[in-house]
Image (cartoon, rainbow, N blue to C red; front, side, top):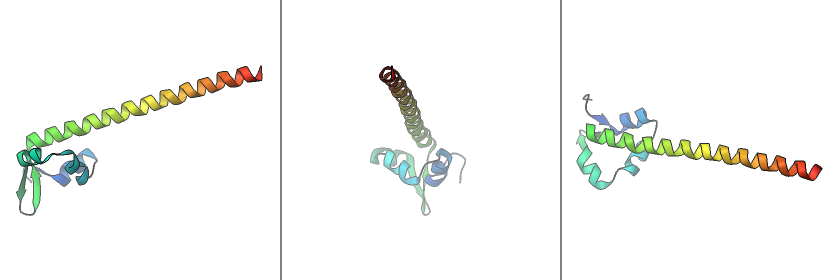
Length: 90
């Protein structure tokens, strides 16, 4: 494939997601702007690749933030349980 064009599969592999995940993120309007069919494969131009990468970077950042919040909540719950257990034992 050309350096500036990637198949959906190539981009999906690079991002560590499925082709379906990419297709679900991209609107019909974006598909018309970024995708072209060469033979029996769809390829994505550079603008599309950059935009799709940004879409998945935001998802990753949100997931990391949610994971950190969950860890903090679990720690807070453990702290509260310890305090309550200590008070009950007293």
